[in-house]
Image (tube, rainbow, N blue to C red):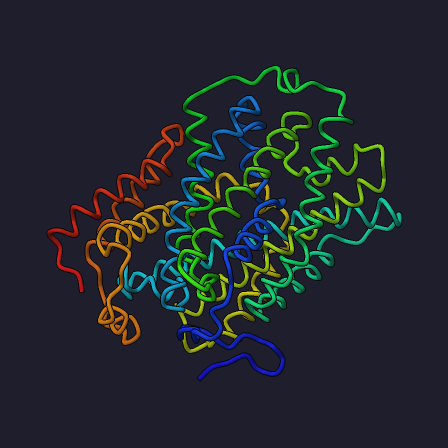
Length: 435
């Protein structure tokens, strides 16, 4: 049986985690999820809702937080199979969408999504680190060198596995919370502008509101295919679900609140850099910057960890170690291209063409069709690869992906396609035979 080796590299790949190792509590998952939330990459969509959507900061905050909460409900629900069966998310997807769609479509899309966010987080964190080094040491290090260094560190920690994720997030949490408190302190005490006057040209537009709510939903709903990667070590399904949901919602509340306020004041998408520069105290600025770096490390360990499992589901012969290594190498290369972070809205929307229909199919199949239960026979089919095709899922995915690309952005295609895909899949499932 696979086990952790002497170098503490996690060896569990697509096989189930033994019950003796399923000891993580809801508090540990809440810490992990919270630590993943407040980071430079996750500030992008809330900030864009203000700077490009021209929404008032409070309206922008409400839009992205509502969208995120809806996504977190789905993500938390799909963490249950991991806790129950000890299997990674991408592997258990075979029971929901069929092995062909899971390995040929769902997992590659998840790999691309994880790679994108890994690179975006690294890019944002590298700018922070570059700024700190220049500010305190008056020394400029080229962006590429720093990006390679930081990305390599996070890829290595992901290679170590779940134990590294848990320990790192627990260690970082006090600093992350204090850093967020200092960011709010700077906003409300040291910025000489009122909230009401921060965005004088902002206007309320329901079309834009739903677009950014949809964008936030699309950004996080892709997690339904990977949340079981973490909760396979949970003591129980309830522990995994409650911890993931509470941590995600609390963390993104702070993310959306700080991100929209800073965007309204400064027209900036990176609060860590801006607030560390405007504060009158260099020590406060340094601490904010450090918390930004630690936040980047936390989320990117998670991106690399789950992305490696997605790659493994597509290419099982790699094994967990080699799949994690390959993901890390590609992620390091992509992190050297800063332009990726400036194309967030368009890239998230393009990825959404695959993410949203698949996520809807996964949620509907597990919650409504299978009623949150996977039988022993179905689990055997997953392991043996007997779930070759799910025609209802394939047809729904094909139609809804095309529809997503042609629907105008103003109609918030993410939410619309998610609901439509759910209905189409339910109807097709009654008439199309699935294996």
